[in-house]
Image 1 (cartoon, rainbow, N blue to C red):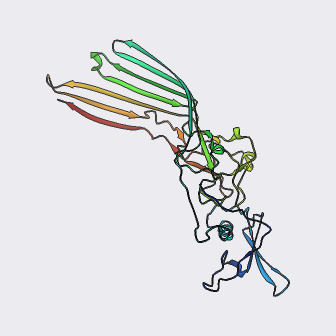
Image 2 (image 1 turned 60 degrees about the vertical axis):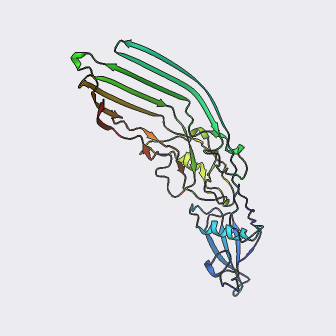
Image 3 (image 1 turned 90 degrees about the vertical axis):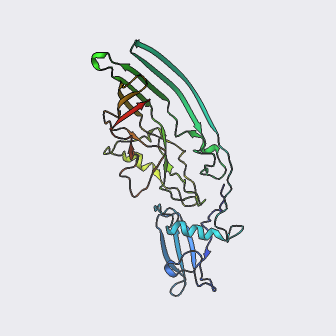
Length: 328
């Protein structure tokens, strides 16, 4: 858990040089002795109060659209808060708790059928729902201590799962080849939208999420090259520095995923106790492009929306493997 004070917009922060070090405590830019904060998107601006020769004041915008953790907005806000901490010499105090909750509800059906004396077919279907409040039992919540806010569909949730497997041994006129295969399908899984690892809420944990003002049901994946809905993009925004975004965890829905693997084998008896088997295995034999988010964050950044909501990975392409097995 992490705890930080709150920035006050009405307070002026002392930025005069430290006599011992000669450094300014908040920001070294603009040669200003006073720092203030406002809710603008302007990274910083300097004004002179009291006319010529008056005091110089640097004003830092807390809605700076930069997602860099070394931006003047975040760095200045952290520096301004340092003296408000119980021990200003400590930049981060962290408490880890081994806790976490998950809830699984599901029902499975399975059917098996021997087609002939040479083969069989097995099919299973699972209808399920998985809810949790973190990826692992030490996951940090977006708001300190508020695990209830993190409760959502798990990254491993998939409403429908289908698995079909089978085996068939061809007759002698086809060299008694043995063909087996497995097909797996799972419906869409959630994904989480982050802000590129930026620590906007100043809790020293880079798990921040953006604000969202639209329909959560519209946050779905899109194929590469598919245009991004401007209204959907406009519904996202960065939270003000010092605050947490309102977008729930794992709010997006990704693509369904399927895989097909085949295996062809021929067994040859070399002697009564020694046999060899020639194997040819094909993974994704149709070389289908199957997109997948995995467990990664999909990052929102106002300056770059080109591939926003687009998966960056696929299941592996067609792969062939040839093997030789000896039994003795």
